[in-house]
Amino acid sequence: MFVKAAISLTFLATVCCALRLKRDTRWNDGTVEGSEEPWKVPPPPPPGCARVECADIKCLAPLELKRTPEQCCPVCKGPFEMDNSYDSPFLVEPHAQAHENCINVRCFAMPWCVEENGLKTKFSPGDCCESCVKA
Image 1: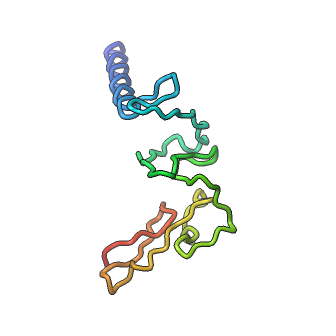
Image 2 (image 1 turned 60 degrees about the vertical axis):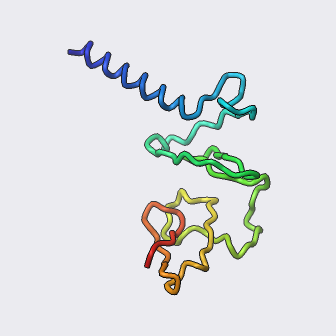
């Protein structure tokens, strides 16, 4: 029975890892399958990120997928570092009830998200920013 369970777990791990590798195959020469672009090994995530599942996001140029050592998941960042002095009417701070892990997150203002358009803003626990939903 133990051998059968061990074989099943080994098979499951092999299938799981093979599927994960197929999604984004990174070669030892520093390239991603189908791309000439080099990749860098990201820093290991913090210990609290063990059960966090990150979204599979793609960034449009000039944004790049980056993760700092204190972040669980990577985000799209521009070629410049945005500091607190950056001022834009379209960037707002995270929601007042956002989790403490929403440090350095900037949310988008949604002036079009109003009842006249059949929309409203909504905050869901666990999110950093408000979302625009049907009213």
